[in-house]
Amino acid sequence: MENSSNSFSDRVLEFLKQKVEAHNARHERKVTVSQLQKVYRRGAESFATHGKPGKTRGQWAVARVNMFLKMLSGARVKDDYRKADNDIAHAGVIIDDGVRNENFLTEEDLIAAKLDVHKNQLQDDPKFTNEMWSTIFIETDELGFEEYVDEESWAAEKNKGKKLNKPFRTPGGPKKFSVYVKNEKGNVVKVNFGDPNMEIKRDDPGRRKNFRARHNCANPGPKTKARYWSCKMWSKKSVTNVTKGEEDAEQEVEETEETSEAKTGLWENIRKKKKRMGKNYKPAKPGSKDRPSKEAWKKAQSADEEKDFKPHMMYDPKTGKAVEAKTYKQHLQLKEKGYTHEKPDASKGGHHEKK
Image 1: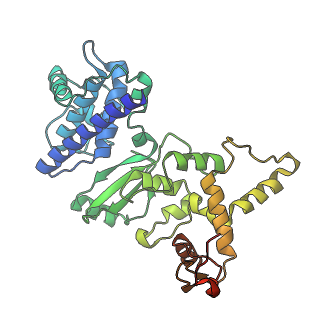
Image 2: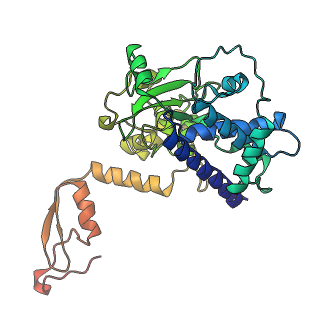
Image 3: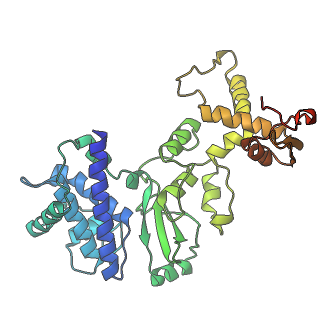
């Protein structure tokens, strides 16, 4: 079941990437993969209430993606659709009266989508359950999405006081926060992140740890992605400090949840827990979610060893060569090469078996 889920989602993702490449090669107004993931997800969701007999959920989602690309290309689309997805990429000024009509896909739109579905083998997989559909590309809801910004729009935003790498709140959406950054090509990208409908529970250590583990915040990826900024918002750093910005993100050294434990030490965290819980404290049993992993134990032991480290001599048991380990890192490197702390016995030809 899981393989089926991954296979179908991967095919859809590859299809969206091809759509992005084709669109960006032909049009001045660029689009990102995460934008199309967001649109595809909305199309799949709306099918449940607005789908027509004889049509499929995937067909409905692809038709909405095509409509979105049509809007960004400058072609005329219905105002009902423009209002529906204008938050994902502002494509022209429109007065949003709050009224939503999801019946904007025509029969021609759905026929074109059906051709795309068959051409790219995106037929609905019977093993792809409703539960799987409900989570496809869900990260665009939980984390956010990115969009390209042209020079004129960025110039206007700078005049309003916006700065690179400085997040700001967006009460009008599309997400809770946005931030302007430059990608590897030097182009400005607007990253929209944070679920506006969800209260951030970042001050709850358990929720924060769960969020960071779920989204692999130990390796949040580049700052041009929503995951990077969502992880930053779900760190120990206060929201106020995050929104103050970082003029040079590459030079910032931030203490994350993952490095914090290594810095304070696992034993110190356990001592604090004992003190906090008093007589109610019980060590976590093997298999318990609260029990530190083998990696955490090993990291804690290494941290203690590094704390007590003092420069010392180490010896090659085969040649008798002596090398001073001036740092804990050098000590580990020499140990990896087979060096020991015991000086070889010269009377035995300079050889000493490692114990």
